Length: 168
Image (tube, rainbow, N blue to C red; front, side):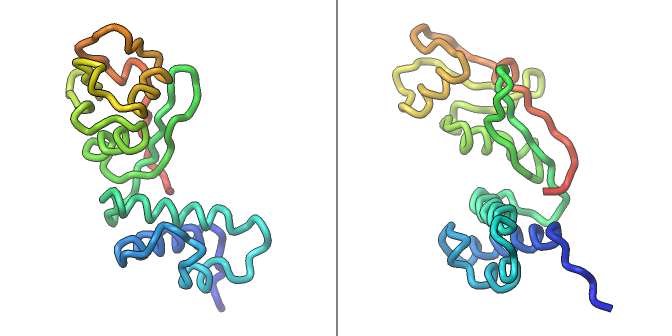
């Protein structure tokens, strides 16, 4: 008796194909991946392929950032104090990779963000003169007044970062 292929299995396969595509040097365009089309998208109804395409892209992105390892992922949400979700995704070693994700997803330079055991994640801003436009915009979104100088700002005070074990 053949095992029924569920949407969850297809999403997991698509994620793996995204990782494989990135490692093989393919571009971040799931529609160009023949394996994805043949193994996951063939025979799907209109709209059913969207979670599959998103899973492929998530796999490609995780591999590109060096986050893909063979273990159960954390589900990470970064939520602004006003309740808007700034980032949500699956990552594997939160302590090692949340700093990278804060930089990649929120647009801050890596040298501005560090993990501190006592304070959580700290955004170091010594002078606003050297910040680029993306970083300045993020400071505005986070409610940090960039017209005055601050030595450090604790990201934890502005964002709620929650970790929960779970599937992608």
